[in-house]
Length: 259
Image (tube, rainbow, N blue to C red):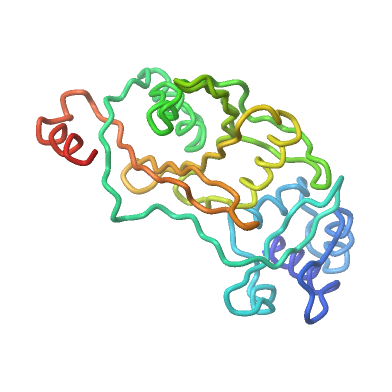
């Protein structure tokens, strides 16, 4: 596949044994595609997006990482990027976690016309006020699909931004990253979200949220935070949206006893 060939050659052209960062620029993708004689992607950004959020890097790149480490692609400025060596950190739904049934308040017309897994997930979170339930706050959608820039990183995109307030008057900004079942949750995106919050809304408490459709339309939600320069999970809950009649007396007793 041309994407694999391009990103692999960009890395290997610049990598030296012992490197922990390998910098490159967007134009390198064009030069490498021409050198390899492979079709030039119509959307160069999709090459980078694919390996940042959807697909593992090629084997030739992975093999250069020492045990317990992996390469990630991060923004380093306008049209500048780096392969950076980081500690392996996968955020995946915990299969042992209890599932909480929530009466589904999603309008049927919205469910019928959702355009993608990501859009459907964001809509379900919004209409069912899952952030309110998850965090114990009153949350309000401020903007979705925000494309913006962060100093020293360049362009980023946040799936949806919420602002929120709790019972003590504290105010929060909640950047939400949503993924369908096949895409990987990205700690890189959460790091970028934190930096954006500090830069643009420094007076609000930033609580980044990752969410994903797991098996059988289970909605997994994670709150994450930066701990010793690494993104760690603060809390995780699993929700399943069901007709109100599907929430049984046994379910309610189980939830009561779990608190």
